[in-house]
Image (cartoon, rainbow, N blue to C red; front, top):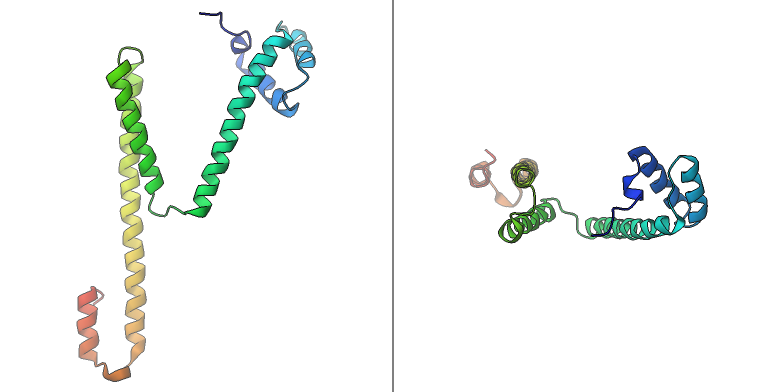
Length: 173
C-alpha cells in the first residue's frame, strides 16, 4: 500500500485553506500553492498537489452535478409526499444490508448499527410527515366542499335534507 498523501496529513485548518485556494485558483498554479505551503511550514511538491487537486476537482465536480440534477428533479417533479426520500432510505438500507452480508468483518459494526437506527428514525419521521400532510390536505378539501355546499342555497332543487346527507357521506357534518 502506498504511503498516505502529505496533503491528507496536513492540519485541518491548512487543508481547509488549501481546498479553498484550489477552488479559487480554478485548480491551477500548483507551484504557487507549493511555495505558500512551504512558507507555512509544509513541504509538498507541486506534483503531489496536482494529484490531490485532480482528485478533489473530480469529487467537487461530481457533487455539483449531483446537486444540479437533484435541483432539476425537484423542480420537474415536486415531491410533496416524500416518496423520493423514502426511496433513498430504502436504497441506503439495502446497501447497508448488502455490506453486512458480504463485508461484515471489514467495517465498524457500531457505526453501521447507529446508521441503521438513524435511518429507522428518519423513516418514521418521513411516514409521520406524510400522514400529517395527507390529513391536512384532506381537511382542506373537506373545508372547500363544506363551503361550496353552504353557498349552494337550494339551486336545482337541492334541499337542506339532501345537503345533510351529502355532508354525512363526506364526513363534513
